[in-house]
Length: 260
Image (spheres, rainbow, N blue to C red):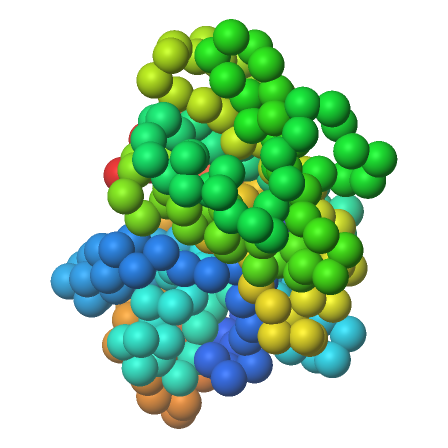
């Protein structure tokens, strides 16, 4: 762990910005239940602990890469400004989560979907997903040439995400399957593909894209009250940045965070 203060801390804080809520875009959909819980937690505590992370798009707007539910919660609460940590492409890697899901009727229903094809042989192009069974066999999901793959992803994820508990697995995580579970492995989408999709009004389903960001700011406890008033927001922001510059700590060792 490295100490407080220093040029590195000031540099990290220079990436922290107050951005108008209307100038922010999402690349993924939200989960209604999770959004409600996030909104209530922020409202009751009165602070935003962890600012969402974003990249600047070519039209000047900010694209959220981590923190869609926090962003939606703040917008839902009526905040005019949202604190964002803006990062560059070299600050993160973009992958896709794998989903460990209980077997259920959703799988039979999905296999009856006429717009989806399930094959045991890997298709020539990139499959929409790979479904791994407990016996080690793999089914490859693809869609017709006319089908929009973003819509297909929504149908696949939506088939199980509302009714079943989904455990997210990192792409290289090891796991053991029993007869009651399957794993859906999704391909990574490039950042430029996400940006193009956003311009076209398309979103990824919630919980598929995985951004691993280096140097993220956590537990800033930004007062919710200053995000409603433009004059107060700008008055208090400089004071907060000065306070953070003297209280931040950089942890260089591995940390295990319990997400509840």
